[in-house]
Image (tube, rainbow over all chains, first blue to last red; front, side):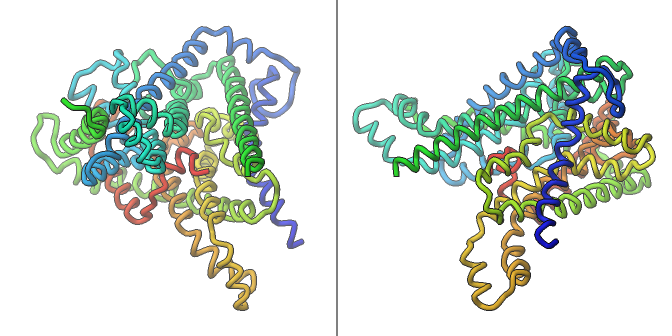
Length: 267
Length: 261
């Protein structure tokens, strides 16, 4: 009896997290519009998801925003981490402190404050996408910074000096020695920036053009509407995203396991 | 100008100044002025004398508090089981509990909503319970991850020492494991409590029409009333500051990104 509580508790939490997604996945392959009785197998939702232009545009727009803002955030955050690391301690502390603000702050506050500054005070139209992109960069660049910083700290600083001694210009030493060393942090920062942008609702709501929707803003609006074909097509989207995330995680785990094996062999 | 490595940080420093500090300065300005740009304390006094907004503050705290407690009660035993188990491929199993973090939260809440409708019939019957379930569903991975990390980083020789000195398993847990894993709990609490006060979309999607602090900002935004919204944002900022000082965890960035693994 005493031994049993562990697997039982484990299973309860696991089911709590996964049952809703899995049930929705099953129902996404039927033609029913509510959870309950299972009716016939149907790919209708997947057909709607692919063939509805509005949905296609919304997904493409979300992805474009995520990749674009992550790209800018990665460049800014990486340069920021490099600059901060090589600055005086006071400057470094100041940058790191301000960098923490968007990380800790509630996204509602971040989104609202950027909207007030850019739209109300600076009169930049939301239709220009500038507030939205800036908003998402503000959300994710600090995380890039946090991902890159440890890699710079771990780096052997004499590598850069050695490159200079061997006649490399500072820029070349940076490009060919420092950047490759910190690349793992840059890449994980980029990946993180993409996921943050994909998951965001609040910053997009306060800064996006009226006619543009991300997955989050679209889903939230769709739950208020009554168009059931769109509602159930979103079940298909949810299932597709779940499968994609699962694949990513599995691949990542597989690679990590292989790496470990290789390292063990080398030892 | 000679190339200097510290100059690389200038673009980001300017960016932070413009889009992190400036917006906060603007919030301050709007919070303490009225429509004609004159200084006023009315937004501030108004918030603390209006029973509706005070009720919202209390309701937010209640939602956040209960959600946080439920998350700790679920996450701690789970993290403990995970960290102390000897299964192979443990990191893959831990990953399973973190993975929902990367699925769009609005789609996850949609899934939860459909299941709750099936179970309860009418969601309007249990608005508070549904909200807590929704928030817990949304934020639980953010509680599991830091607690798991702090327990698995624990120095095992300390536990052995406790047992050598005559402590039984229960005593060793309460006197060694629990206190030493508190930083992980605090970091999880700060990851759950604040979003639970502000993420009003969870309430909206589960048909709970009561306001939390975030909803106030949303409604001022919809009414283009920047002064009122700024004051709410400022009050939230104040709560966030106090909370961060109290929990004082440096790991927030790692946890939220799921990179702590």
